[in-house]
Structures are given as C-alpha cells and as structure tokens.
Image 1 (cartoon, rainbow, N blue to C red):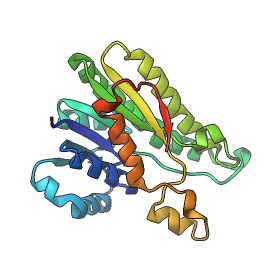
Image 2 (cartoon, rainbow, N blue to C red):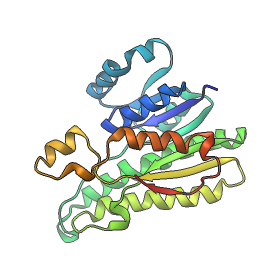
Image 3 (cartoon, helix red, strand yellow):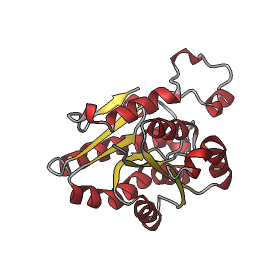
Length: 228
C-alpha cells in the first residue's frame, strides 16, 4: 500500500538515495528544500517522479517550527518521517572551537529533527501509526578528539530517539535511528582524497536500512540505534 514519506535532507548525497529507496517501494515522497541548486539537482535526478505526482518538493526551513509545519501540511497523512537533514563540522579542540559551530551543529542535527517530530507526531498519534527514523553517527559513541560539537549533537539525536520512543510507545509509533560511519559521498572523497575508503559505507546501503526500519518487517524494532 502506498504511503506518504517525508524525507528531510532529501536533496543531499545520502538523502537522494533515501528518496530513491522509498520511490522504488511505491511510496509518495515529500522533500523540503532551501538551497535552489540542491532542488535543481534532485529535479534532474528524479523529475519523472515529480511529474507523476509521487515526489513533492516543498520550500521550507525545517529548523523553524513554521517550516516544519508547512512540510507536514503538504504531506498530509505522513506515515513515515525520515529526519535526514544534518551537517558536519569540527576538527579543533573544545577550547579552540567557536561557539557558533556548536550552535550550527545543534541547529542542523538536533533542532531540525525536533521540529519535524513536533509537527508530525500529533497526526501519527491520531492515526495510531507511524515510523520515524533519525540519523545519528558513530562519532557519538566514539567521542573522537576534535569533533566534540558534532559528536555531542549526534548524541542528542540518540537521546531524542530513545526518549521519544518511550513517549509514543502506546501510540503505535516506532522511533529508531541509523548510526553511519563515514559515508562514501563525492564530498567526502574530495575532502579526504588519500583516505582508505574500504570501510566507507555506500549511501544506498544506509537508505536500504532506513527503508527496512520504516517497513512492516521491522514492526517490533523500537528505540534502536543501528550502526551501518
């Protein structure tokens, strides 16, 4: 049965593969955007799905409550929320890291997920069904030196996942997260040209786990943080 799936961050390297995964499953997908060139890239990649009415792009900043509400309204009865929007920053010691970086990491990685959950969970409660998948990171449990702001923000995503699941456990809603390591994207290849990529994860593999977590096959999986 076709569902409506919200994929935030759906214009990025990982997000595009997540969009592909749900379109291949026969779902309708709603993707918010704020950067025009990223919107154009997704249109070039999946324009036929837009023409068929199976992919809808909504201009909205999901770090703001009004933007998140606009996406939820466009989606209507969203059965799945993928909180894929996020960002990376770091590389310096805590005493050398600007406070602005801390603000940026928590705005991109945590505030966006919280805003979307606030917008979507009431409807899921009313329908007695829904699946939310967040994106954490293996940097959270790893606590690598120089990445405190990023790791702390992804740790907060794990806390959000586990706490929200306890709050909605009787409402028919499942909340889980994936925890990737380094993702094999063009940006990461450009940033780390000499790195050993043998342990990097292709984004489509991560997307496949997300689609599984949102499926009936994972109906008994709740509050999990799955390394990918």
